[in-house]
Image 1 (cartoon, rainbow, N blue to C red):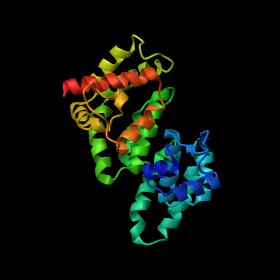
Image 2: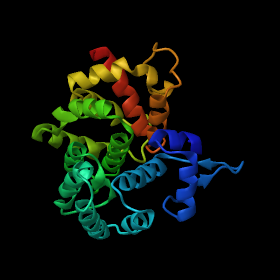
Image 3: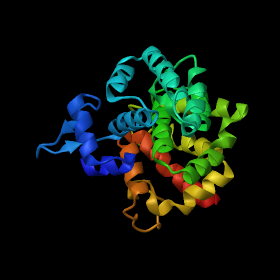
Length: 265
């Protein structure tokens, strides 16, 4: 992504992105041979974290301290100070204080704890520790939670609700492990097709319907045969950015999943 695409994806201005670079809040990305910055998913995740923390009322200096502390202890201290300040302000900030109260009940605070309460509940159950693919999923969901409007966020959470049931979570954990095993594999690996079949079967019916209905936003290399050219949409660019983070074998898994879901729907 270029800087303008990154800024549009997260909902800030390019000037803000450059300012965060200048302050050290956002690491400088890799530059291409022509000197242009090339942003990837992790840059969008980092920028979304800064945006969420500013929306909670933290200063940029406080955010720098929070992001520098991996275990979130500085975040708890800053939020407690902010809560005390909000308590002295007008009733219009009551919603903000309630949100902070929820955050302060968390034992393991980190910047992604500042997503919406419903999304936080989903992220708590994802097995991020030890699974690189689950970590990508966590970061993508946190990013989507930040940039989505209230209606889109509610719709996304409704679609994901069946996946939060205990049996579905257990299957998700196993599928994440199998995806991780393909990190260094070729697309022709014999484990790809069985995993794609199991993953497609794991997708709830309503979610499968939505995915198939939005195939025009899926990049060409992931779309079922005969789907026609992909539209140049924000959704397509988002998915291309995500798939740049995974291996060819993992991309092949999702290409086959798209075919299976289309056949099923």
